[in-house]
Image (tube, rainbow, N blue to C red):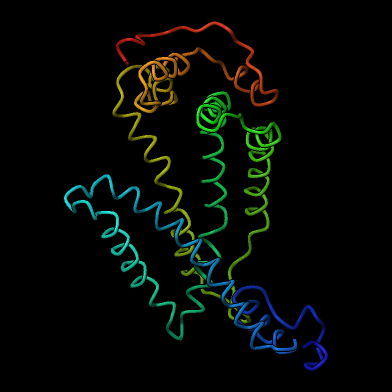
Length: 279
């Protein structure tokens, strides 16, 4: 392609949609039986897109099911259809002539630092607030084996550091969006930052709302809100009591850090606070 166009290879195609929809499509024409390769390529892209969409849709539907009791036993199906219909209508503007410019703006801001912040929040909440020891206990209870040691290290230490580096890199290397030779006006950058922040802002707002609805001092509120929910656990009575006792084990940040690093508990005593009442 570069030889035919008489340009360097790096100038054949730019990043963005042009890689998949222009560059790869044209490159497939140079292969033998190009139609077969083209069908296989776009079928693979469709499967990847459906897989990503299914994850996003199920996340929203699972949340809405808490409020969809009036829809009857087919509430899940109705909510899936409703969510897909709404997302279809919201995505119709991307199919217009100005769609590539709007898509580039959304793609420039939405899946960048906000996704890294969400991933960082999740890994910290699971491995440090909930604790790698409780994760291992639940996995062993369900599958008979603990988390592999390399996964525990990756989730507890390596991933948070990499996410922080990615977050800092995304801010340091930030540059205004552009599509080809088109430079976006200033007000579109404001729209982009609003879209990006709208994904992350609900997290601190929910934390503030939780703090305002829990009674006690700030330390007591922090202790309550960072403890695992005692409503979750095995249905068997004996195992559920053991599960609640394990939840009420006093742990420090150093204890959790030691377990995430070694896979062994540094503490041996348990303090059971109102276990029978909770049960």
